[in-house]
Amino acid sequence: VDELVDEWIPEPLAQPLTTTEESDLAALPVVSGQNGPKPRMVANGKQVINLASYNFAGLANSEALKEKAIETLRKYGLGSCGPPGFYGTLDVHMDLENDIADFLGTEGAILYSQGFSTVSSVIPAFCKRGDIIVADRGVNFAIQKGIQISRSTVRWYDHNDVNSLEEVLVSVEKERKKRRGKLTRRFIITEGIFARDGQVVDLPKLIDVKYKYKYRLILDESLSFGAVGRTGRGLTELYNVPASKVDMILGSVANGLASCGGFCAGSRTTVEHQRINGPSVVFSASMPALLAVCASEAINTMRSTPSLFETLQENVRIVRGAFEKMEGLEVVSHVASPVVCVCLRGGVLGMSGGGAGVNGMLSPDAALMIPAKLSSSSSGSGSGGFNPSSIHSPKEPRPSVSEYEAEERVLQDIVEECLAQGVMLTRAKRLRGQEMSECRPMVRVSVSAGVGRRDLEKAMGVVRGVVKSVLGRRK
View 1 (cartoon, rainbow, N blue to C red):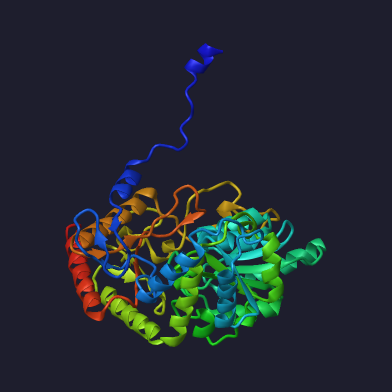
View 2: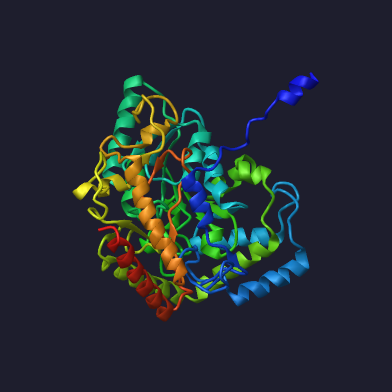
């Protein structure tokens, strides 16, 4: 036995990093001290203009929130020391839930301690084996995992295409009648602002379709709550739609309220159901009291200072306008999105391949999804459950790995040179081999109301010069 033990070589816990992964890891910027509109970098001690953090309303470095946090820390201590259903719920947690519900105009809301686990817990809390989920092909990784955990029957519709959604709903009903299947719970799942490309869903049309075909709607507003609308209430305010028409509104307390975790708002019944059926609620400790108080204070700030969102939208127009004038780039995100997604325009690299467009560049249609895993059964309309390969539309061209990596390298050069000149951007990152599909490579610019107009114009001037230099070297 001793000889066998000596000879035994354990398998590594993780695969070695690839050359690309090592390069990406080495290029990650490290901030010294607090984050905010102008953080200081560890590498050189210099301040940079931050266009890479989700700090839409500019509350991340608010002195009022800091004072509230210190005051709460002295009163409650740091951790909650338990899950919400046991001894982890404090009065400030209940206050925040009431504040969120009142702010959005829903009957109730429930808190989650981690932003990622919010939607991945809400979905399996309601969707079970035999239920029907119809989801956008472009949903984020957290939604993908929630759908997978639910073991429901899944149908995909084309990214941000309400007509495609309606076609899928019609086909689902035809299939049910053909099999003489019984009625079951049915859900439409999508995002407000899509994390992958900054597109915004047409909420009024989505609600019309929901009522027409009698589906429940789960809307992930992780990037729209605290970012769009006159006072930051999200898409319901942007489109002037009553929040009660959306069955479940999910949002990020981290992104929208400069705190941590997430929430689900809806009817009192849906909220109370999650208290004993949401995996993350049952098994995760509550968020620290100081973060709950900070989030409530952030809501008060958003109520009393709607000018924050006027400033945010003005900054979005400045950033979009600058990128739209840059030769070789195209903006693919919605005009109202504070996450401005920028791709290389066709013909810049002069590559060739299956997914190429003009002069061999990845075509705009290829921007939506590049399948991460392919299998022999790629139909999205079968009777089985979660099929990773079915998320990719057969209409979409599939670019080669070399094309994808070439675009990433160019964009990474732009990001690194901008950082060297005092502007922090980020290239959209993907979980290779884990996500069902991958987006076209892009630079993701996070606009904040906390960045002043002069600093923003200075930053875009730097970006313009870097883009011209980097793309000029490749012509």
